[in-house]
Length: 490
Image (cartoon, rainbow, N blue to C red; front, top):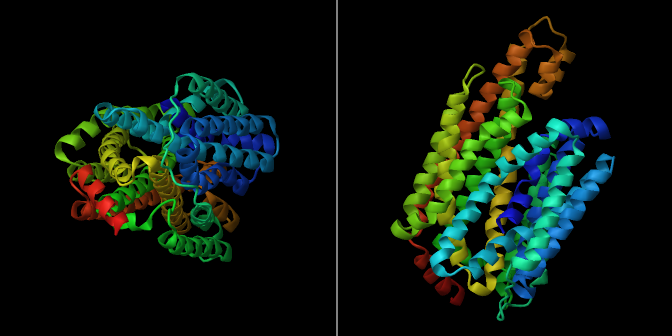
């Protein structure tokens, strides 16, 4: 289960470091490169909820096996094609497979392990879900030292195929005899709602937040969300009962997961650029630099469920969010001359905080739904993660980009032609290619200033969420179960 989870979680960060070579060989422009990454996230997020329900109804092991097969097919095809449009289509196929795999991994764990061992197993799942990004960076960095970009897809496809073969023999099948029929209308509306929101968030930074396409995406998402709410309140057996949002533990868990990965994905997206463009690290060196955070996240995640069982979920959740905030505040203070030790001082509390905060949030979400809907519970957890991460990259990336562009415009050398300044505003990488003299120094300083604003924004969001969780979050999972039973009955 953990290898299957790592395969789908690492699929985005592993590709990020291969984009320069992919662009060179396929002729992809910046918009196409963005969609090569985001086609996966869009399909993945949109199909999570119905995929979880399908696993509960028809068996989690078959859904896992089919998902791994579809993911591998998309990866192998992406390695064989040579046009950007074809790569985008293949990434969408892999996104379908990932949506089938990810919620199934957690629901198999929660339904297969005894109560005494479940906490440790879920803790391991949480650690891999967070540290999978680092795994992807390291493997891609190593592959690209010797091979071209298709090797990244081939490796992902091979790992998925090997995991599929192992799953056939060692993974127990589970399905719930009392699982409800698939709520096809609710599933369609939830998929369109998530897809509309994710699509608009991806397009917003490039088209503009008031562009008709961006507003149309959000409009579609909002309309479908309202229709889903109305349908689910009237349906006899909805895929996900909206009344669960009245359960403090469930609502607090969804909020916490969304905000954690909003900050985490945005942080990884930005700090990798800092390491490579400002400090001059290679892709492999950048992956190695992030490894300590992944080790701390994985190590603490294994112990966090025991802590939650002992003291309840509220204290670890709040402390975890505040640790993440402390880490990003340290990262906000980095400049062009900072040493790696200062980077490490920010990464370590982020890793520890993610481990502490994710365990009680995931436990609260899973506890709110009965055993016959553990696939849906897992999908809610995963959807909050994916939507939060996509929002984080888009919003924090936009804060960084706005600060960077303004800094370049305000401090560019006056003797430079307007064309050079406009080109430098596109990205720090472009500015450095234009020259490492005065323009390069101005661009680096502007990037660092924008970087700081993005992280200060992150810290503020985390602090507000910590206050909300402190006020609303239940102390123990039993409280969430009791509230959920009362809410769904009423």
